[in-house]
Amino acid sequence: MSNILVTGASGFVGTALCAELERRSITCTAAVRKASNPAQLAVGELSATTDWSQALAGCDAVIHLAARVHVMNDTSDDPLTAFRAVNVAASVHLARQAAQHGVKRFVFVSSVKVNGEATGTRPFTAFDAGAPQDPYGQSKLEAELALKEVALATGLELVIVRPPLVYGPGVRANFMRLMQLAKIGLPLPLGAIHNQRSMVALDNLVDLLILCCRHPAAPGQTFMVSDDHDVSIGELLRMLASGMGKRTWLMPVPAWLIQRCAALLGKKAVADRLLGSLQVDIAHTKATLGWKPVLDIQESINKTVAHFLKQ
Image 1 (spheres, rainbow, N blue to C red):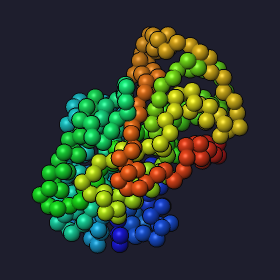
Image 2 (image 1 turned 180 degrees about the vertical axis):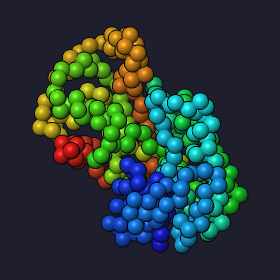
Image 3 (image 1 turned 90 degrees about the vertical axis):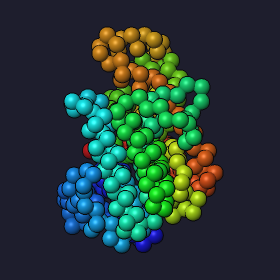
């Protein structure tokens, strides 16, 4: 690899990815909408007309992170159209330009939401039919299918990666709220919840994305990724508390009662995510790429918690 273009380079994953590429002495072009330092290249808003020629010059691989991301309370009048404009049309436009500039490989960071929102009797795999439940997941599925057509027509080597929840130093949203709860140490009604959820540490996802840029078996493949250790919500809270040197008290309240209370408070969707299971099977990823997580889950949580406590 002589030069990798990273889109969305100022985001949570992009920042860590660019830093790791630099640490490994791999040249990186960090593309962002608006540059905040000389190391970044401004490309403007993502659309079907964005000019990527300067960013693609001399690149032999692209890791495409930039996207219109999933939000809980989308205020768009037509969310699916808004997601499609960025996640589908803009991604296809970039891939076509990449092929025209002689880029060899295109790593597309998709989402587990392509598979669905929850698992039942078995984890999601890379070979399952797509079953997205929201506009974001639908747009990612459509992007995957459209990019496969571009790859077939141009010879561009396409690799698709579907992460579940990504956490690490600087993580925000629901994971940060869980850390806040663990820090406070209040009793929580989650002792009777035995769900299982897959997550992926930032370091592990970054390592896999870089490997996907160079591994000869990666092209044409879709990979699930995780820490290879699924956890219940209770286990996660205990691990967070352990990383803080604290203990957590989990009361055994039935899931149905939590869900009923959450519904009365208008928080049913929050409860469903908190109590439900979402697992991914990474056997195909490990076997095809010879990959395993570089950090185990407790190491990754400790690293995340240490950063949180410093803020």
